[in-house]
Image (cartoon, rainbow, N blue to C red; front, side, top):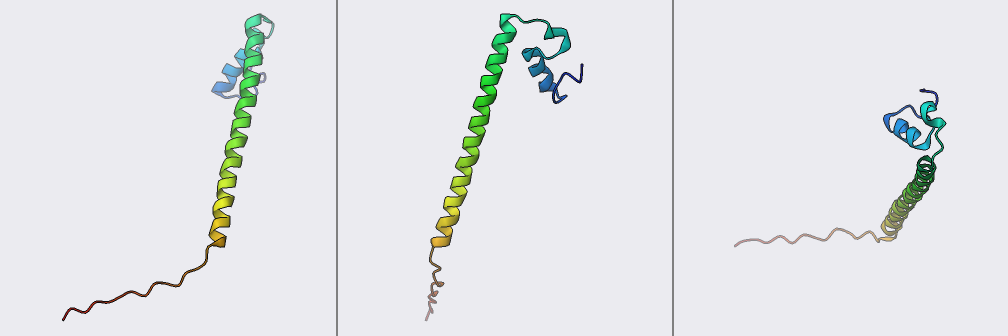
Length: 86
């Protein structure tokens, strides 16, 4: 049974059950299992796309910040004024 579960983790067992990959349920090809396979495939594609968009968004923010920092002019320190109390 462990060989049929791809990652061997707790959630892999749940996904394997929903996909019909566990041998005890592999023979069941009802509409419920077919619908779950379609929904899980769509969910995996959506999560993959969102992860890529988040990564590209963070990368573009980092690059924009880096370019902005490189274009700043270095200002000399401002002379501090000292007040003398008489």
